[in-house]
Image (cartoon, rainbow, N blue to C red; front, side, top):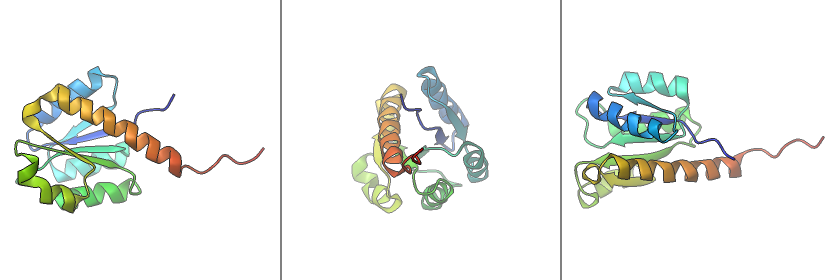
Length: 138
């Protein structure tokens, strides 16, 4: 049985971030919330998240920089799920620029976002197991 990667949820609304973390934790996932870049980077250093779940439109956070910094901090293995009140048609270029793995609209609700997070966790776990070194012969 594989262990699910830790999840970093970033949203400029602390209430929204904590609410999603609560839903994820109720499903047995390990998640933390951040609402500023400094907080996100501090948690990233502590948690080493396998998945970044981030709002697209945040006034005080440069999304491209956030995604880049999380990927660097995690050795490029973190999956990225973007979520937004906007549609994919409206933010498709942003998804491509961030090299995000997935997108979901917030209006689909916390349960749907959590479903997509769980699917991304499984994808990240598979990617990580393919890149893990083989055990030493013994």
